[in-house]
Structures are given as C-alpha cells and as structure tokens.
Length: 120
Image (cartoon, rainbow, N blue to C red; front, side, top):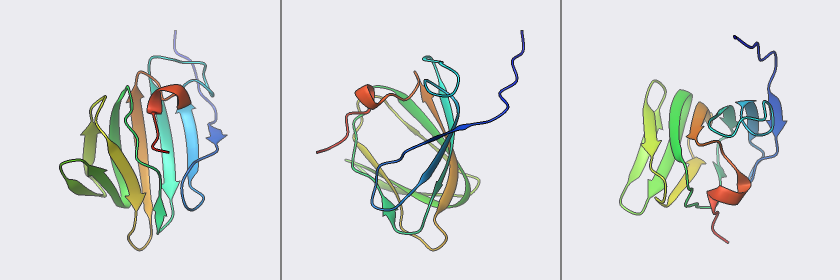
C-alpha cells in the first residue's frame, strides 16, 4: 500500500559549517533500515571528515558543486550529475565552491552512524 511521507526529519550534521540534512526516508523519519533518502544543503566552504561506510551511496547534485574525494581521485560533481560510492571505499565530501551544493543522497542499506566509520 502506498504511504505518504508528509515531511522530513532534520538531522544534525557533522562538518566544519552547518549543513542541513532533511531525511525523507531512513532510520529516523520512517524507521526504514534498507534505504535512506536525504536532501542535503551544504554551504560554501563546508567539509566533513572522511569516512569508510558499509553502504552504497548514490548522490545526485541538484545545484552547485559537490566535491567527492577518494583514495584514487577528486571528483567535482556538478548540478545534473551523480556519483556512486561503493561500500568500504574511503570518501570525503565537501562543497568548496561559491554557493555550496544542494543534493540528494540515497544509501543502501540506510545510513547509520554505526556503519559510516568516520575518520577520527
């Protein structure tokens, strides 16, 4: 049966500047563990610690540019582009460019603080 999700939960973000996380589907807003869908808004100059998550993460950039660093590459993902990060791969997200970034992140299984494994 279809289920309306009328609003998102605002989740506290980590990083150097305040970032807004609006979780639509996931462990907090819908008690869903197999997938999370969140709308993120990160300001210019925001960066978060690196991480080695246990989940796939698909990110679609709606506006601005999101930087995704891995051990092998630095990807600047622009509006209209997407990136897929594999489980067990070290990654770090940031929005170093003017205007920041607005994007949707989908995690399979759902994001969890216990499975993201952030750097110290």
